[in-house]
Length: 347
Image (cartoon, rainbow, N blue to C red; front, side, top):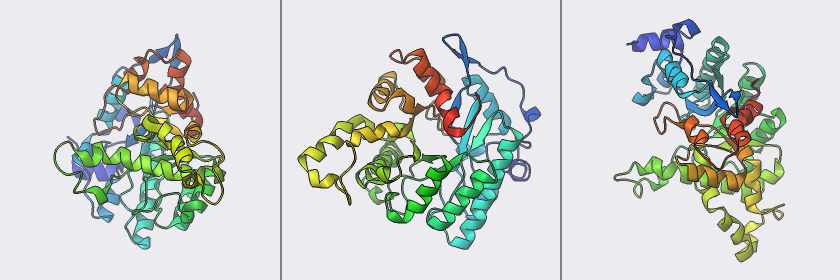
């Protein structure tokens, strides 16, 4: 078993072992995924890691789920038929002071770029950004993309209770639109509902995470943010939370309470129509749920997600392959073709 010291000194990320080089991976025959006789390069857009040195700077301790070695993660990917992962780090730094968070983000992004450079056929990564300081986050995004080769940014569903529809985040969103890169929204839960979500069922995650994503997307729609930045590329984790499952209510409120659907100017289209310019991962657990999501937002807007290493599912590839209502072309798109376009990955 790799020691904590080896994790820090060798890999620079928790989930890897003592080396980032491919030869450290005990060779397991990689499952090749075919659809309609065509080999598909599968891409997982929802895969996490942490950087131990950054965790130390923040005085944080990562969950035990991150104890997987590099060889173990590659072995699991090979067994499941996952060719590539887009790595992201869940934002736990939004309350940090500026000087400290500058160090944290620089360290994380450089380590992520190193992982990807040493394993270019298996990993790409989303930049970390300090959105509590939007001007700084804008600089970090541009540097991460242009200098480090990162493919966008991983962001929370809010920043210390403030939604991304707030005008102070517009410069960051404008930069993401200008760069043409993907923003991957992953919720951090709803601490303001801590008492209501206590008890059995892991409700702060089970309910809180999809609820926060639902709120974030709804604000982006109703506050006119998606009208203001029509070229913005956003992917929401966990199938977009509850919004796609109850989307028609979002339209009906504009009939029942029309003034509630006006920001500074009326929305340019029905709320449900904005769902077809967003992207969603496939982490919704049943063929019926995936069929419904595709019917609501379009199969072209769905990409594969596993939530590795948290064990929510071990069957993302088979989940997609086993949804009978999807055509071969739709399955191929969800498994990897759409993500490849969004992330700038050759197929």
